[in-house]
Length: 129
Image (cartoon, rainbow, N blue to C red; front, side):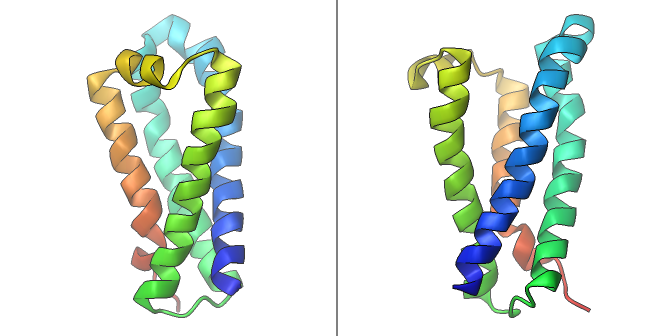
């Protein structure tokens, strides 16, 4: 149960930050720098959010330093994030799943997919003191 709770909190933290940064990126950064650059500029912020959220939640919930608990937390958050992305975000943007993948920039899209992998494994990478 602790792993599920950690995964849900982790998802809420990361999705919440992305939900706040998304409109900022779309309304103010994209018009000045373009979509690719705006997404690439947002990525270090999201990676920092991923790192700090994982570290905070692992420490706060005293999640054991086991492969199953840490990766469980990460993959629960990843699953929830993908479910939210493919339902809520696509609906808000008026896209189908095929539109989503066909319009994804190859450079910023690749970085985004790498960040999703990082989201899944970050609870394992952060150490508890």
